[in-house]
Image (cartoon, rainbow, N blue to C red; front, side, top):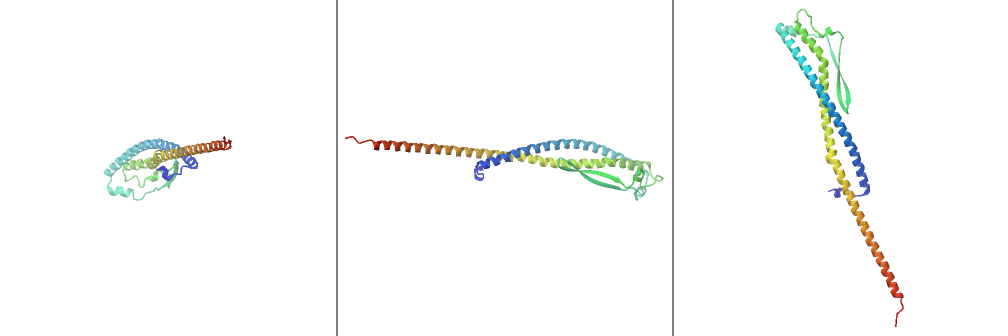
Length: 228
């Protein structure tokens, strides 16, 4: 199959060898990238698991306090308490490059720096359990943002690892073996051509020698005098 599409010349052999050398360098770089991405992915996954456990525990505690507050307060009182919030939250998204993967970094800023502004109600007609639930959720916000960063980073890094793995496999099992087979094919053809050329030269040389010596022998016989 290679003989149908490849011109077995020395120029093509040199070009294919250069391509193979470049492919081997690229294969090594991609393997290093894949291994480093995998290492960082495992670290991120471990951090993600710890953050998720912490966030879920905080949410469970906040929900428990909110359930206690709902048991003491009426539904209407709870809705009125959260009807007019005092604080505003602005979320900014930045990007960080990890092995050519753009992962997000979230940064939250509040409108005011007063911690009491997170309570949108007065403390006279509300339950202390409701205050605890709001405080716990407020303190949980940084961990929630870090968890969102971690999960999105894991998702992006996982996709990049899979893409890099496919490229490594394509180089290792398809492109590089094809180039090596092409090099063997061209080398074999060039060796055959060289042997054929040597055989032709030797045959021409034998024919020339035979013609030369026969010519000289005939000349000597013709120059000898005839005997009576």
